Image (cartoon, rainbow, N blue to C red; front, side, top):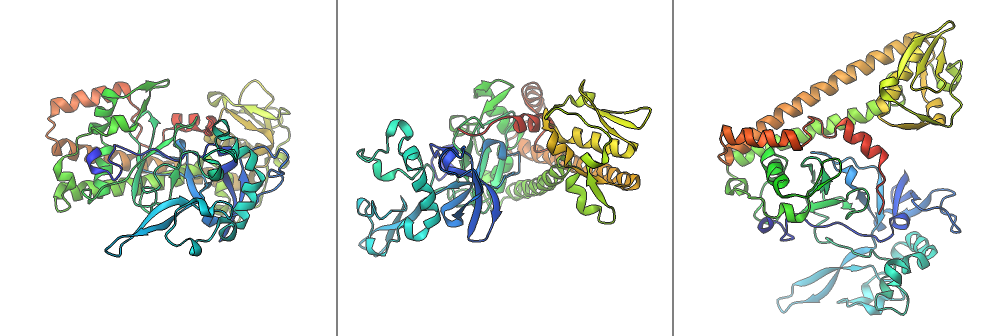
Length: 470
């Protein structure tokens, strides 16, 4: 595969900021040209944690962690990374062609340290993004201290103190590409068709790799279909490193040797068009699945728009008693509704239960606790969930929940059916006979995760509980 990528490798590594807690942000509000953001560090003496800060959107890029990349889909969590880079004209050839390259956006201090074709026309970061520059200035000492003070003023790289420590892949992010989880139980390739995302290279979240197609790849969806096939996963798992929890590495060294048959590169070939079409359909169904799954996980608040004719109130006001512990330790198998002398209780472990006058309120809360797929939940969060005041409203809510679960199962069936068709096409394309197919499927059955959904419930629970920063 390495001969078919723009990076001349199986996949290219991501962006290393060297200080995610200062340079990666969670979006609080989109104001158009400016974003309100929450940094990931403690406010310390800078005061950043007191309220969201404002940074120009042009100085940022949408940022992915490993857990944001699912099979067929990207589940971006509105996370951004400071990205002070742009393309600049470097020189002009004898034929009049302008040669451009990526460069740190210069500041007034270091403008003369870079080679630009026309430096007088180059706008500094102070002029272009004053809010971003003000934020960076507050944290200059921390950013200079990265990599054993590599960016101290008296060091060769001192002029680069506000950039990433390793800004890899700048030529490949902003084009149609595939992204994949570096560590995963199964092959999980998603399509970034707009070339929007920059992504994390490694870290506790596992990181992301990218595949930037070369000119020979005319149908990136068809390539995605092959990479998400059982054949490709079998080849990778035969050679890949295995980590705890049966997670496999999908790093460059395990991808670059994948055999890509010529038919996948022929835009006129029926097989190529068929695989591309299947990949597009599975991706759309997976996106629908993810949206519905997210709605179910956020039950009951996510269903409020479907209950316009019912009055809602919080669990705190509707319950007649609730636990006192600030953090609830949940045992999914222990969540139950029990009738008592004076009402109904929602039990989730040995701690004090949630008590309600009406069974319907208890059933809704029990369903919400199960849907979260969390081992712990803050009591304050649960008490703020809003339920219909009247029991008939709760019955309506439970009916909507049941219908949504049925729709989710239909989507899973659709995804599984179309993935079967995709795998049959890949088997045929590579001339793999039924006996060999059985070897592949038996192997993957033992060493893989084959849930039909883009993200299995088990994986989702692990992702919700795992950190992602470097």
